[in-house]
Length: 142
Image (cartoon, rainbow, N blue to C red; front, top):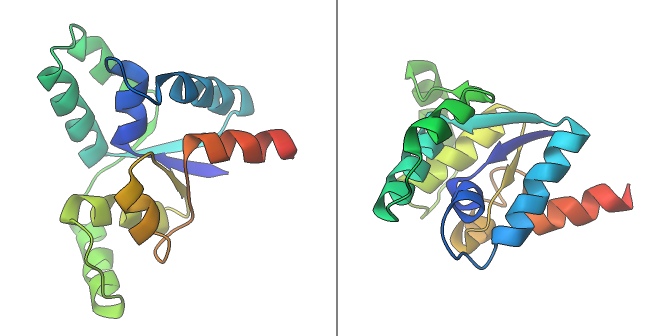
């Protein structure tokens, strides 16, 4: 399975006192054990680093460097060409950044992994989507 990981998962894993921290840590352990293919839109990196900075996280540079271990997807003109076609075919009320993340998962034939309740509800018509906990349960059942 190819996975696109939302910033909510990175933030819960790396941030401070998040209700999903332990599940996110288990999720990352599981995906590395499963040797899943991971894509990360550049927008996710920017969101994650911004929120961690707002939380006064002390290690932004090392965190930024770890993103290079994943397949980083640029939101470039090729992406925008596909994006406009998606907008013309599908009406959505999603926030622009959430839609760009879901579209990146769709265009890269990936399952979007997120804790964000709004994305979980609204992106179902765009791409396959799971919470980290659902991914772990699905992996254990296979």
